[in-house]
Image (cartoon, rainbow, N blue to C red):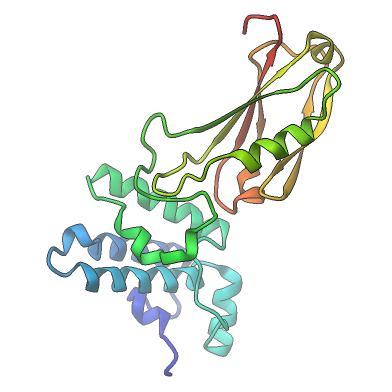
Length: 233
């Protein structure tokens, strides 16, 4: 099987800058969106798949270096496998929405790749799509255990786009709020240390910056809103 020329696919020269590659990817993604190719949706899907594979390599400095040296990366490009390419894809989805273009075709383009990643495209960025998980912590309870149970019981969200940020709510006792807590949040098998400071006020939101890159391999923060039993937030 002949090797793919990712530079040709993105229509850029081999010496193209990172910015030129990014611009070419976004331009071609718009061009081959199925909504702009009525009657040729299957062909457009394949073209879109190809430019995403190419950008997954050329937009990733490490993969691009390997590709330039050996002509291959050993595996197809993954636009979700690098912070920079993921961020570009997120921006592209917003552009689609701004121009009234749909997202449903992406489920066909990426096939089973996104299964289990809590990432779907049909309602990307729409208001009210943030996932909220509510749980309580008994006075002698273990926050880590509660979080793990909630994750196990959480229904899958296949078929709708989850917001880039995830919200949790916990209810703790006044004594716990006074003393503070430090436990692990377990999400998708990954542990994140959560520090609830002593004297925290009801309704305070604790931000775990870029935590979803650790737990989900997608951009987004995790917020924990702390409620205190018997207090009005």
